[in-house]
Amino acid sequence: MKGILVAIALVTSQAHAQYWQAPNKSGGRIVLTEAKCQVAGLESLLAMWTETADGKLLDGCWTLFADKVQVIYNDGARYTYSPASFERKEPRQGNTRGSAL
Image 1 (cartoon, helix red, strand yellow):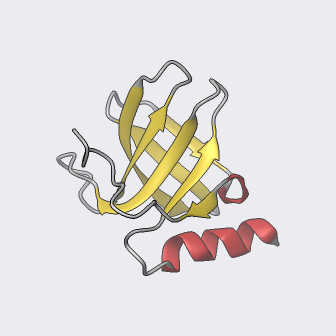
Image 2 (cartoon, one colour):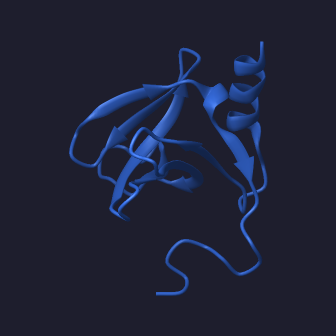
């Protein structure tokens, strides 16, 4: 039941400053955003990235389908994750990816 509620919240969230994150196996995190995916042919999906423990960023796109978070990384790799693994976060004021670069 929790997974279904999280899945609904992932799809229906309206505040664009929010993001969702889950830990990954490498000790980093997976970050789902509400920004449109910029990869040609995947514009109907949303942008995401994965951070590894050593700081490497892997960009991709995501959607919610069949009660799973479906991710397509820019290298073509595809993964599914449980929505229950993700928690909603609010960025600190003025803190958005790339804004400090």
